[in-house]
Image 1 (cartoon, rainbow, N blue to C red):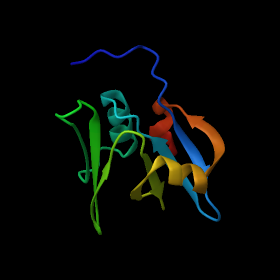
Image 2: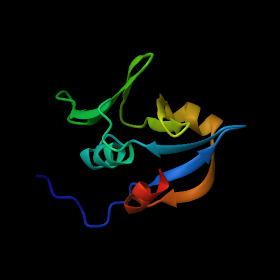
Image 3: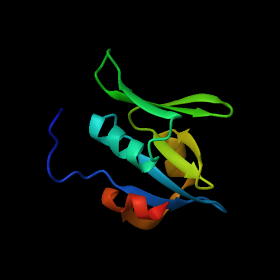
Image 4: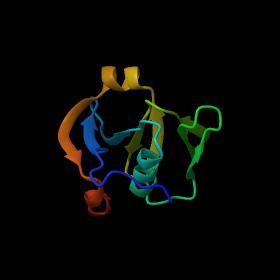
Length: 113
C-alpha cells in the first residue's frame, strides 16, 4: 500500500452553472485523487479506477446508461441529480461553472449525499 502525505489537499467543491447546481471534483491523475473520487461516488460498481501503464497516471471509468465515459488527469467529475455522473474537460468546466461554496473536505463527503 502506498503512503500519502498526512495532509491531502484534494477537495470536493460545490459549483453551479446556470441554472443547475452540481457537485464536482477536479481529478489530477494521481492515485490519491482517484481514491477520493471513488469514496465520493460511494464505491458504485459503475465507477472504477486504474493506473495507465504508459505514463503511470490514474484513469477513472464511469459506466452510464449512455456508455462508459473516461476521466483523465485534469478532467472534472460532475455529479448531477445526486446520482448522475459525467466528465467535463477542464477548459469547458471553467467556462461553464462558477464556485458556489468552498471545498468540502473529504471526511465530510459521507454526510453530503
